[in-house]
Length: 311
Image (cartoon, rainbow, N blue to C red; front, side):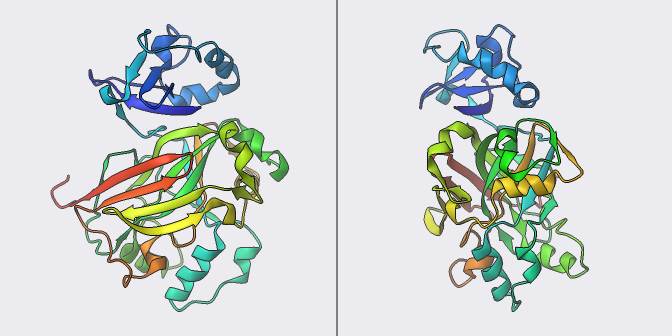
């Protein structure tokens, strides 16, 4: 299933799922209030609510709570997640990005999956504008996949981690490279280089839809990025070095994970301008449209705008 959050023509926000390529179901309206109108509350009791979802899977067009996609505006599936951890799980990206900065690979990367916390209150959805941060001259995209935690857990074992995943979505970890590089010289970060915006969407695909695509530590999912229609990045999620199970085990060591938290994979190989080099493409500028596409997860588009006029 593909779960979404959307805005109706009257300005109200609700949540539900796609019933086909042209229609979405408002789960609160269709269930007469038995299901919540947002995905955070849904995830808090997803095991119980998924039983109710089963009774609504035969809903057809024309019934109460069914809207055409053309009538609504998709938002970030979880506009305000409970947290956002972003890992560094693709070896090719790490090695190439470091080589481009004149740095050797570090042995510690092979010992533990590492992550940082980013701003979970600066989440953007499909079609939303991304404001160029003040003072940034090296704006970059990052092509990633994210998992959504669907069950509370602490000290989770790697081989049990799949039970705690609700689903997956596309993630764009926007990066102000010049701001990031300066602050990380101090030995702490990234902070302002990352916290201005992260895009997710257009929907969350439940994990059962990807089960047959499992390959090694990842899934056989082609990952692409285009800027203004030009293909720049192309990789595959199956090349991931650390599995989401390993990431969840690391994140939950001595810490409780809650439904509605997001865990990002880090950038796939070739998945950003920093890695490709500016001889392949310049840094992003206002007016650029960035389009991320992952097999079975959809397409996530955003346009860069100038931040000088935004307060």
